[in-house]
Length: 155
Ligand SMILES: [Fe+2]
Ligand SMILES: [Fe+2]
Image 1 (tube, rainbow, N blue to C red):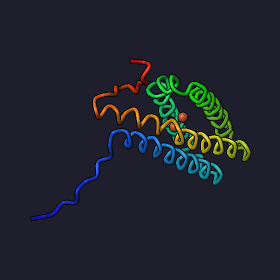
Image 2: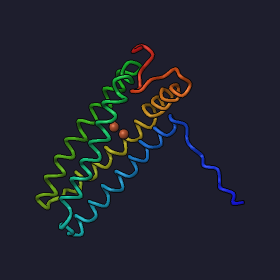
Image 3: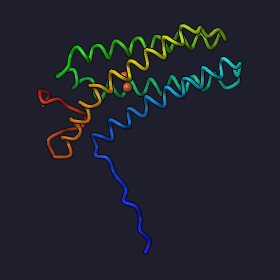
């Protein structure tokens, strides 16, 4: 008889937290790769890669804005607004960097500012928003929660 190692399946709430955190790490790695290719003069596939990065980062923010932030705002209004404001800055940064890449004139300080913004934003969400979302989705496992994520006042 072959023993199969028991798979550890994360609880739904932990899964949501780790999925979104892994997304942050993946997006930062992807961004660094694109910048490295641009600096090495590898412009051949740069436009396509940049569009893919832009699409992935935008979908990540869309998901947060549509599925998590509305309910989060009921419990933490100022923090939810701060996250939305950062999304606006990130979207503006994407547009500016896309133009720089098109013109082959990547500015070092713009790249540094953008990576700093992405990192600070990831830290912010992982400190409060994601733990909050995990807690709310974990409630669903006991039959008390709902999807999309909902705050107690929404019900
Ligand atoms: Fe975000
Ligand atoms: Fe995020």
